[in-house]
Length: 159
Image (cartoon, rainbow, N blue to C red; front, side, top):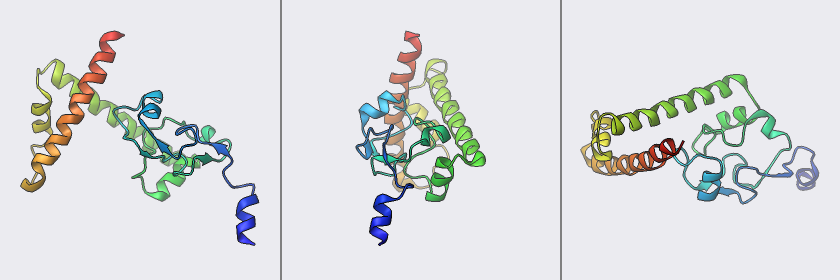
């Protein structure tokens, strides 16, 4: 009986996910379409939880391009965001604001401070205490900062 209830329930998702376009995962095309190149990586879609389907009206609660709604968000917080919980939405806005400030700092350090991506990575790694993971983390940061500089600086110069 539960199988049929789940299949025919009015609460089951029935609309194609607008984030992943029904695929269940976001790819680089989705990330570019939603202008999240510096904030997301390809992977399972957090908007539909990898199902490819969402409840109708979900976009009224949370925009499809919400940066905060990612797969490593705790399930309870994900549910609060999707339900339109005001406190969770405010945490999301705050997260997005901090992320934008971080990207602007990287841009500033490169354009004004004349630092290379490697120097910026060293700057952010100054408090790293684990020597075994230092080089790996530094390399990841350096690659990310190269993307920030390429995408953000190029985009800003075009505007």
